[in-house]
Length: 402
Image 1 (cartoon, rainbow, N blue to C red):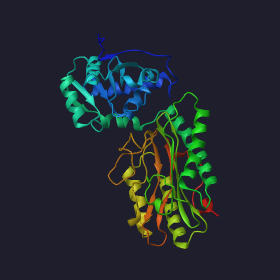
Image 2 (image 1 turned 120 degrees about the vertical axis):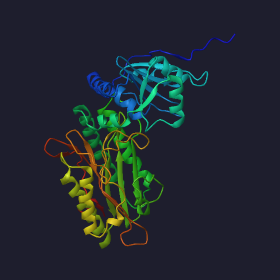
Image 3 (image 1 turned 90 degrees about the vertical axis):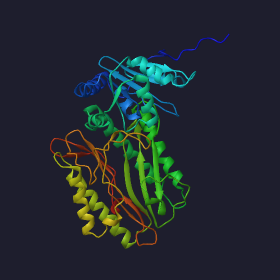
Image 4 (image 1 turned 180 degrees about the vertical axis):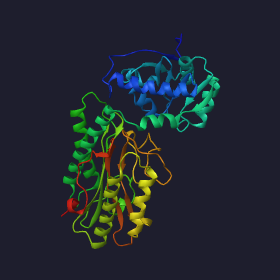
């Protein structure tokens, strides 16, 4: 006879693991979320994004097509996870955990509503929730859904001292990865071989410096020649050759926190136009570094950098915005879109913001100096200016490889 199988259950397994931050850090974050709930008159919040759940609980899920959640009420903080992950979500979260099973469709929503109870209004992350999930949420909870994504993004944008310390160490590890990448560059070496050298160096240092962490997601994009045209172009097996423009991109991931080092390099002797474009981009980089301070709007910094590139006659070659926020962020989750150096972002910088300066010029193939030029530093906004966390050198004087 087939045993009765539950829709959901609770089963702590093992001991709680070391989390990225102390319990009082998560308590402060949840207090901030509950202040948002009180201001919006919401009795509960349903978090569904990787960045939202990780920020408030420490648990970074691996979806693999299954939904995950964190339900926050005035008294409780409970993650809802799939049975395939067993006890790991409980071990890696600051609060309680409820496991849903695959035995029948919509057990995820039955588990969510079990934690929620009857609620008249529910905060959700509308920038993450699909239309199908929104319909299920309304059907199963019976609550009016209210988008709180902008509110919690604004909370995440101001980093705590503990977060800044983690980002600082990430920047240090990115510099180590950059050095390993630079040392691996030589004619005939493939992009993938150079990338693996940088990734291995960073993962080894994360394991040493953060022994309680989950080791996941650290990566390198190393591009050469025509592959430098896109900032997010994947690694290939292209072999490096003398005369190649190169792009170094190192991304150590610690507890879901993203840091980055990006540098332009050249293998061999660069031609005059390559040097001119590279130095223009360096000038934009240095101007951006000088402008980051409290009180300035993101759009004002963008306008100043646009003016410099326009005066040099290369504004048409600008590739994207000049910088973005940091925190729980990855190439497949997270984004604090309210803190980007773009024309349409008027956020005023304030102490605790962490932002990159990363101008990029892209010159298409067939033109002198063709390729992509990019530099990237991480800055913490302080009370009077900004602290640059990146130490790896930039520019032709440092990164021409004979």
